[in-house]
Length: 627
Image (tube, rainbow, N blue to C red; front, top):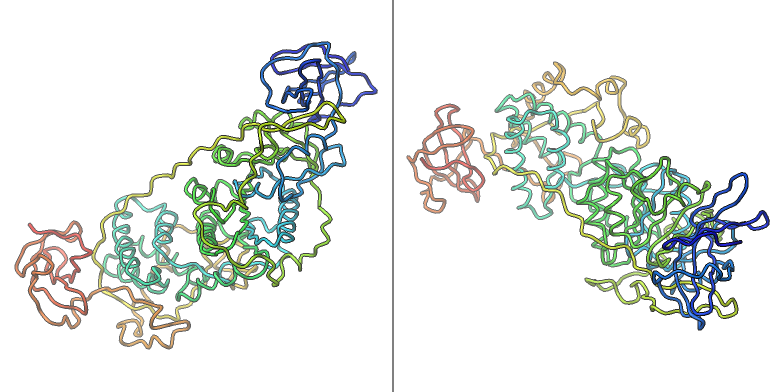
């Protein structure tokens, strides 16, 4: 092999047929005073010659002390010796090794320190078999180290393993965040004026939720509120909203008691590895579930390794910021190459693994030469723990002598508990290598130590939608708890979710899934439920007969009806209003306060409005004002 040209930090070689340099392999360029380590980054052959291009990576002295490349260039007359990968890998900072794969074309295993997971390790891959193989290898090794793993499965990669499924094994609490989700995704087609009115209703519900012990609202109670508002306003959009909520109710997405959503705490603590199956759930709801699961993991006093596949639908900058650099929930991201937040992941990941992309990549220009040369099941890994050197590895199923029953079984091997800390303990921090390292003198030409790690930058959170001030609540009407709903959830579950989770649907419901307009059947259904004799008054229904009802866990949203017993009339000193005062409301117009009464622990104003008649409003959450 001969040097043809050296330009800046690149060296061009010519080589013969008997020589076979490999992409990513290292070569030592030795002179009398200083020696260099270079890595092959390009190989080319034409009809006359074979060429190789290598990038200078490190320098080392006669004593074998390795340092970063200093910008100088070797003499064209220097001697050339290929370096065995072991001589480079011995310099990597490793305390607890994790096997990643064999160096391509070699029989040498690349080990990375376990701290790779503590700095948002990111895997860019498109194919399920690649993701499955990598995660399976990593999880089994974490099991051996008695560490707890949680996997989010959005593609059914782990369908043969025991997993937790939404509606079947756990439900979501209808919190303020989930109300915001419903407002954002289930009311996309509503015009701005109507959406503002509905936001007023939602805001009042959110204010009420914040006063509850568990800060969640039973789905049945929310449906009752929307029903009461529809009866008062006759807005078709509220009828559509109610129809969507009934589908949520039928699919069992949201809880009616705290036990239905708190059970996930117990299930996440079971076993060595937990799989959360989200494959039949749309991206927007996946995002909410991932956020919910991550919050539950944060409350567990154990080190947890969290493997999360992200895509353009199931994640945003807010979620990424929540999961990066957590002090004891260590998130590994798995993303496609064209992920819209790929740059944000790169900014925060100290180590990255790239599998071959489907298309030419522009975001990863530094690795394009390597990526375009990868064979199936090969990947490039680069970062702080490889000292900034891209290494090509062959990823295959590791023979770890473990069965899936071992890893996914019920026996707990992971360490039971740790003290809560704001920072990662010293034992869990990335080992910090020294700037100088000795090279194997027997080989007399060697390689690297430190290279700067990927710079970090904060990810900004997108602005939250503005909220309108809380509005008053309309007269209450109770819905029959036994109303049957035929259709599965629209925009929540995919078409095959019902068959996967034993949720029965009729053939007619499949044809109605994509309907965005209010049909005559919808109107008839809502009117029929409103006219049901059992729903005329809350006092006519024995709540204890409702499945899952609990007096303490199922609060009822307070909606006040002027026609019912109003209690004791009082002065309005404590609320700043007086009988006879004129007030103005943005929705009801102008009116006069007829009386101020005590209603339970509330002080309410009975107001007669010019346009809509009498309303009983709570001044603490309503937006009327004196005129």
